[in-house]
Length: 205
Image (cartoon, rainbow, N blue to C red; front, side, top):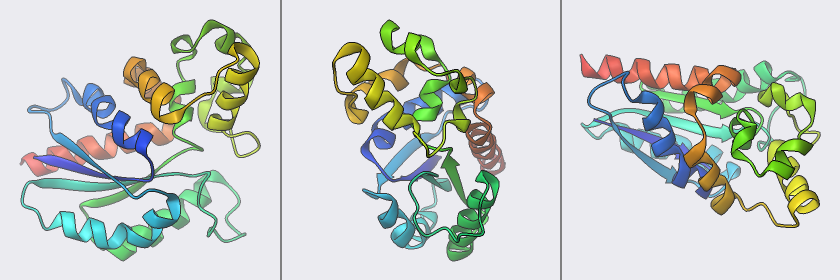
């Protein structure tokens, strides 16, 4: 049994399978394989999601296919969608309607994947951790004014004179991130993980 993750970047592709499996450990047995497919960008994900999801759903050993997008990325959200909930609902309805299968679910990193990392400040270099603004107490509220990745890029340069590299630093930080801490602080991530577990339990019966 396996899960397919349709993602938009290399950080997700490298970091998320083991991160999600660590959260699933002890909740379902056997643990599923998690296979990531990198669309190489938000626009590509939006264009190719239905075709790719439908293709993978034809495979007998696929329990479910999940799409994951940074909410910060899409530029095609109508202006009347103002809140986080409205933006997620619009994109979720659009993509799930295109795929038209109960085994496909679209989820979002609010507002970026790096928000999950901000849930556990102790995994960062001390100088960076000390400079975090108070708003990271609610990581999913670090929004498009200065989204999580841009915040990290700025603080790494200012405090430790290094570049923050998503596919290097981000992947390494994910290996140390406690998924239960991120789950507790990031409601959109928690909804994603709960959905994944429910789909796996359904497929197991």
